[in-house]
Length: 381
Image (cartoon, rainbow, N blue to C red):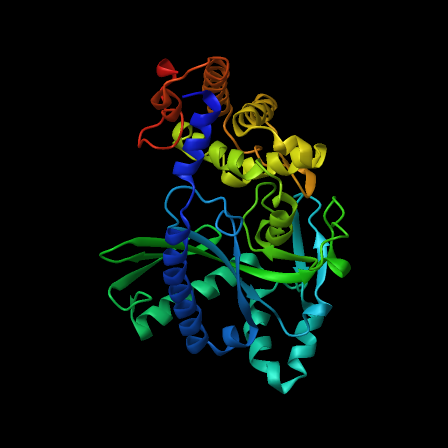
């Protein structure tokens, strides 16, 4: 088998099959709808401000690899009179904003339909009227726990042949639901987000693309690095739908991104190189290349994008696409960075060697990707 044939076969093996995607999606839809419904039944304020779900991450972009058993979904929150929210840049944390809701609170207090929302959210602000990220998350956590206690944690799957047991975990930004049944397991990260229109509220360094029809972005209550003072007010800028639009229809871009993620899974057992970091490298490269560039063979593109990743690791810098002054690798340990750089370099050199040979053993190339449970050892590369 030649090199490109092996690369294409690996991409086919790691890509999610249509029938699996459809089957898992049906169960995901049922679990998602069940959770958000019982949250609405449990808390009247949540019911008033809940604005629907919105997928993000690998599943939205059809870049999920292997089993489609992990989902990421924003559940949107929309405060009454949200157009009066003042969005402020966080000067100490590029890529983050603060939400000043004192004016919407005043209007809620004066409107009998929203007094209950006012009483709840008035507890979630500072004396200056800025929304406290942690208080929002604690409130949502209490709602989910109460909902499970009230309505139970069992749910039939979509064809009623099996029953899921649901377990709730609070992990960082996400409210994670682990669903276990006899036939399969599913993990869903529910992440709260406040939705805004970029025409009026966009504060990121990079201009929002004019050709995008729905100019939406989300403010996500996400922890940040930086000074302790003001850290509780941080909401990260998140633009999943537009990022999907920027990368779609780019020929062999998606196959190589899947291959990069699979290679990362094989090398980086500590998950230091997040999927979003890899996606960010592709967003930057896509800006610098025309569509013809992505028509190159997947193997050639993969080596090129590995070079881009290595450049970022050597400089310990991946710029957040929307705010270049935010470095996604800022918190990565130096020793870990050096180790990852060396390992990725060795894998890259091995791929180049294979690409120059008229015939390669498929299993040797396959061993570089995320099929095995153990990470690659340097001495084996």
